[in-house]
Each structure stands twice: as structure tokens, then as C-alpha cells.
Image 1 (cartoon, rainbow, N blue to C red):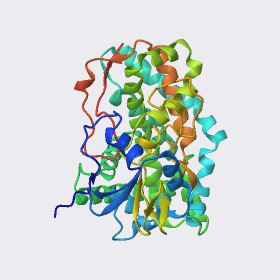
Image 2 (tube, rainbow, N blue to C red):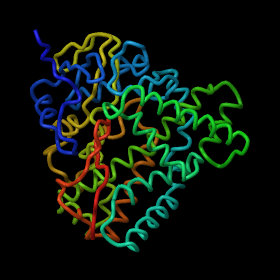
Image 3 (cartoon, rainbow, N blue to C red):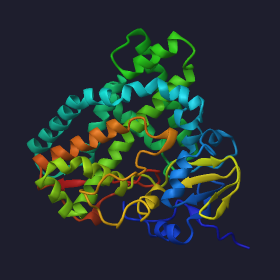
Length: 396
């Protein structure tokens, strides 16, 4: 008898459209078993309250994912020594070592540089004139410049780093062997970076973490290497994907773009609404149920991989009223755009600053910004965990 268990990720067009199957799952089958395209089985969780619990309840483990036979959607999530792949108390120990770089005060000190880079990029767009690629000419170089400066990485190396990260974030775009090769090459790069920074330390996060490593036993050498892995991926890929997706969303909802142009002070509210509304991944980060757990009346067996469908949860009426409507004046919701619980994104404040600075500059200086052609012509990323355009031609 053929196995009719659905395969995840679902075969849907690569875009930022609401996934109809997510809507159906949330209303009819909020906890459902699937086969993963990468092998093995998992449970999808679609309702907001359940997704929030999966993120926060210690019964759901990240550390268990690294076990050899544990199914995962993203092979990179089996990397050991990574902050994201630990549970308390290991997670608590590691997280303390980087949080000081992302406190509200520390991020506020970055504001002038974020604004300067953003203004320089817009100056470049206006000087060359339309059309421009909002991905290559704006959304990629903004976080690339910031993460390079934050981590002390030569700006010219970012293109290579981006290529490796795309392999590591692959679900089906690259083979497991290609992904493993990318992990090895990125690791080799970071080992060399650490060696250089040991000899010539700077005022950057990499040098600071090396000091922590070399001053005692708080951080092992593998933990140091993979901490840099995580900071690089989180500090670059998230913003680089969210920005163009947010622009497409606002162009589709032109009245909301116009509201921001008329009143840029609404941008902080718009950022929170966009973090709820705009998808950037196919799924939240997997967890493993360490005991039998009941979610929405369904028992998830101990040892099962659980995939929280954040995009589905963000359109749950339990989170906000009229969730299908984009409203840049909506009061901030307890969305899960930066996760929740102990794995809440350590760089969330910086991500918010980048998005708010970029939107403020664009609606102020380029209020006529729009797609240069039909959205149907946009080329999308294929086979990655992230959802977003490869390029986005815009004019003004």
C-alpha cells in the first residue's frame, strides 16, 4: 500500500504568498505527521499557541537534533557546538558570552553606522538611476557591511561567505555532500580568521570572543568556531531575505507604503507588523519532543522531530484580529519573527534597527519606489529553507 503521508516542504510555487496548505492545517489538522524530503518523519505544528509552546517549553529540545538518526529538515541543524543546537544549561553559558554585544545600549551605538551605510547605498541608487536590483544593490550589501564590521571580516570576503551560507541553508538546492563541503570550507575560513585575529586583534566581536576563549575554559575552540558560524548566518541571511520580502509586501499593499511615506514615524510599528506578516523561511527551527506531549488534542510521541510553522501561526486569529490584513498602524503583537524562549534571536535588536533604518530611508528619499516590471517576472530562490527573490528590479 502506498504511503499517503504528505512530504514536507510542500510542493508550492517559490514566493512569499500565503501557503493555502498552511491555512488548511491550522484550521483542520493543526498537528499533523509528515515525511521530510530529507528523510524520516516529523510533526508539523500550525497554531500560534502550539508553536509558541514548542519554542518555549523545555520538553522540546534542540540538542537532541544532533543525534545521528534524528530527522531534520535542514542538515546544517545537526552541527554540534552551535548555540542554537544546545539546551540549558549549556545554552545559558554560551549565550551569556555574546549577549553583551547585542544589548540595547550596544545596538544603539551602532545606529549612526547603520544610518550611514543605508544613506550611502541610497545615494548610489539615486546616482546611477533606475532600474536597480533591490537585492544586489541594497538588501544584500546593508547587512553584509554591518556583519563584516561587527565580526571584523574583510568586506571583500562576504560574497564567498554568502555562497557557503546558501549551501548550508539548502533543503534540496544542493546535495548533502555539497552542503558538507560548504560547512568545511566555511569552517576553514573561520579557523583562519581566528588565527589572524589572535595575532592582530581588533575592536570586533570575533576578537572579543577569542579573548573569552583564551582567558579561560568558558568557550572551547569548536564552540568559538561555530559561534561565529551562527552569528554570520543570523546577522546576514535573515536581514538580506527579510528586506526584499518586506518591499514586495508593501508594494502589494500600496496604501500601507503610502501611509509610511506620509508619516515615517509609523515605521517602528510597521517593522513589527512586517515581522509578523512577511515570511522568510519555510519552517521554524526544528525541536525534538523529549516526552509524549499533547498539542491541540494530538499526542506527539517522545523522540519525534517537531516543525513549528511560524508563517501559519502568524496568521492565526488567536494572535491578532483580521490577520490577513497588513496594517502598519497595528499595535505590536507577540509575534515569533525572532523566535521565542531561550532561543529568541540574540541579534533581534540589531535586526529591528536595520529594517527600521532601511524603511525610513526608503520611504523618505524614494517614495515613488515600485517594481520595475510584473511581479510574475521575479526570480525566486529555489530549494532553500529561506523564501525570497534572487533579484528584485525596482524603479522610482
